[in-house]
Amino acid sequence: MKESDLKSILSTKIKHYRGLRGWSQVKLSENIGISTNFLADIETGKSWVSSSTLVKLANCFEIEVYELFTPENFINDETKQAIKSAIGDISIKFEQSLCQISKKYLK
Image (cartoon, rainbow, N blue to C red):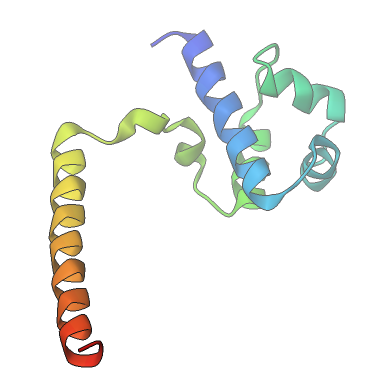
């Protein structure tokens, strides 16, 4: 993995967590004590962050620091298959329940 990959992942994650909270760059930069321009540079991959800024970001987002570097496609194939299987099972049970309700109440 290259430094540019880490910057890209961090950038994406900051935008993601900031968006979940509905925060502007101004709001987040105020919360962690950096300039808005510096935050914009981080989000565009132009600048890197110190360890203390990483800790501030994680604390602000109420996550662990490593979560700022976990790529979105981190889920492995085995986990994906388990999720698909669970969705299939849930769909079948849901359909069966709807049929039973329909027979009982919608005669």
